[in-house]
Image (cartoon, rainbow, N blue to C red):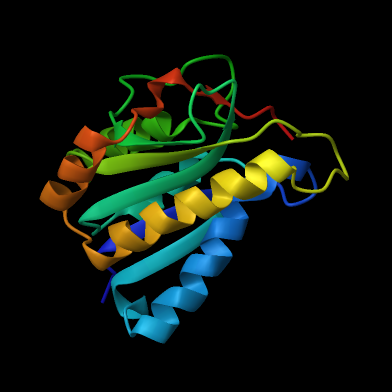
Length: 177
């Protein structure tokens, strides 16, 4: 049976704050196991999203993308992601979450599952850099929200949480690895 929720931790562990997505995914994996909730979630760690990730959405009730963002006015942002109508740019590599949702809709001829982005502010993305102090604080704030999302994995619940959180539209994607 396919778990109801797909969670994507996006980032490169070797590029400082870009590791925020995978680090939160690690915490979530351990926490879900400890809470007996792991069967309802499938976790994916990706350096960057690709068209193939659209297949990971098949049979899901919800999707969550966790990624570092830069130049955000807030440490943590959470909000819905809409499917992009077409692939932007000249390549199918390094898609944004909306691009993956759009590919799913085109390939499967059905609407993508409701999807959300948990964006965590990062400032240092250099190769070999450690996690910055500011990103460490943002990670802790994001972890609190992530546990709440995992406790209540429903579209209506996440919509409510998104309505009180800062929408991630103010975030710019992290730099390409």
